[in-house]
Image 1 (tube, rainbow, N blue to C red):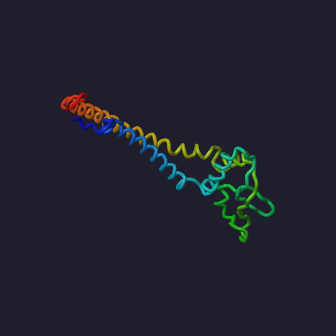
Image 2: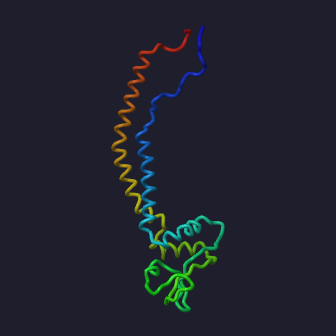
Image 3: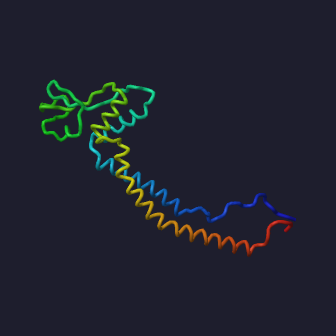
Length: 183
C-alpha cells in the first residue's frame, strides 16, 4: 500500500538564490536614499526645499500649461520681484506684511506658466540645473561605494554558499533511495 500525499516538493532549502548579492543591492538602494535625504535636509537652502514640490508639480502637470502656486516675493518700495536665497541673508529684508524693514518677503499665490516656472526655479533656485541632478551629484558616490565594497564581500560568499548547497544536494541524492515505483 502506497502512502503518497500528492505533489513532490520542488522548493529547495536553503535557497540557491544569491542572497548576499541581493542584500547588497537592497543596502545600496537604502544608502542612496539616506544620502539623498541627508543632502536635502542638511545642505539644501530654504527655498530649494520649499520649492521642490512646486518643481515636481511643474514637471508632472503636462496636461496643464498653468498652475496656481505659492511663491515668495521681495518687495522693496514699489519694486516687486521673485525672492531668491540671497534675500534671506540680506539684513535689510524683513519677513511678513507688518515688518518695518526697507524690504520685505511675502508669499503670494498666483497662476504661473509651468514651463517658465520650472525654468526660473532651475536657473534662480537650483543653480542652473534640475534638483534631481543636485541630488544625484551627492548620492551616486555613496551608492557606488556601498555597491563596490558590498559586491567585493558578497560575491565570494555567494559562490561559497552555492558550492556548499550543490555539495549537500549531491550528498543527499546519493544517500536517498531513488524515487519512483511502488514502495
